Image 1 (tube, rainbow, N blue to C red):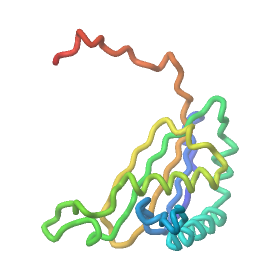
Image 2: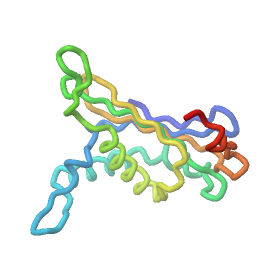
Image 3: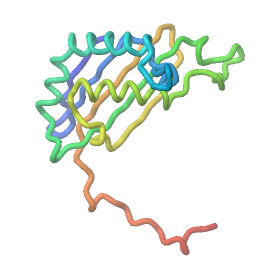
Image 4: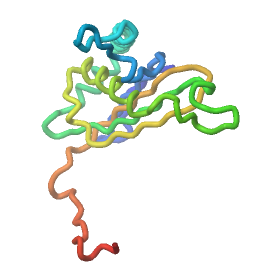
Length: 165
């Protein structure tokens, strides 16, 4: 997988990270020991591998950050989580109900990306995530620089009395 920095036009800047790690669920990240919540060994190993990957591909991240101003820009995030087919699908081809929860995978991946980039994840204004069956486990995170939403961008919503009940 090749990481990319794309400048499609003068306004659209993206960074695409293809992370060759299995998605990490929030359910497996922490353990309770003597009444205290601590990071699990699995999560500590995930963080180390994640940081090694990000450090090796920091040039793409730096190019994105150089084009980013926290005062005028926000970030749109697209996340694709690839899971081995048998982990998320039943034999009949339906999604397993007891499989990986997508929201549990988003939290730690997003936290690790923004921690490495030294950015506050509060600047995310749009977040999309997908769970995709695959032959191998990996994660693709695409960051897109967008204009910070302003009060002029807020649509007028209909009044409660105008809505069909």
